[in-house]
Image (tube, rainbow, N blue to C red; front, top):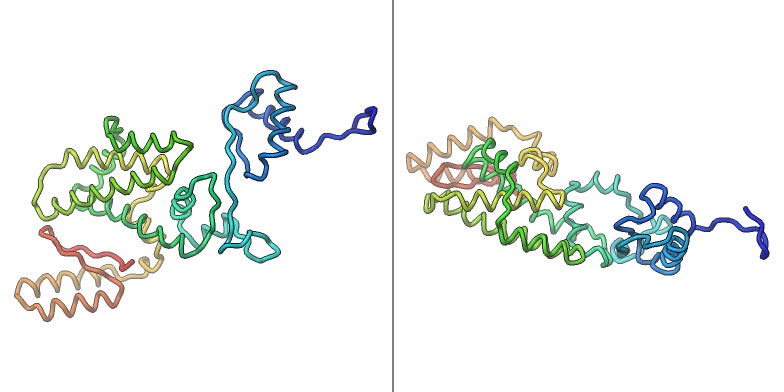
Length: 288
């Protein structure tokens, strides 16, 4: 403490934040964040005293995030609804959590509901399923090469970035990403049906999707790894049996024994396996 005309003085919580900020970030830095409850008086005092002490602007941008509620209630240990990130990623795939959080504007409150998180799971599955389809068509090496390339002249990528420049509008940016995914899936449909052989535009579109996903921090796993992590039951499936049944069904269809083919398909469906037929052959996926 120090002596003053008004009694002994001690540094308050506004002071400690000014000291920590300038120690690690310097006298002036770009972005200062915090919850919306800290806007006044804490951040106003922190800014005022820092400007007086250092001279010049303290932080160039101040961002204040909304609160997180659990099923409509304030999160607190006393209510027994407190959820840590460590606990959350035990129940949900980390990329699903990230997508859920980014689907809301950072200044808006977030009501953490299980059904709301799970509702976004289908969108993430659709994204990985698209990569899986392209790997079957083009091969993993080609997909990896496209991922490493940078597409710069894409209007959708520009729209995506403009949303982020507009007060970090991640919800709008995610909308652009999945518009792009839907368009590319339609192109894949045509390619699988051999109605279209052009792939140059598809490659550029995929490159843009990879860049958008990289900024959002998703699409970081191989499709097989993602689906096994999302649904651990995949690891216990008898892959050889599934492939054998698919081959038997293909043989039955070739012999026009459609009753047997349908019976095999129904048996696989009872195991949670969905078959998808195309001119290029039959593939299977988990019923999710």
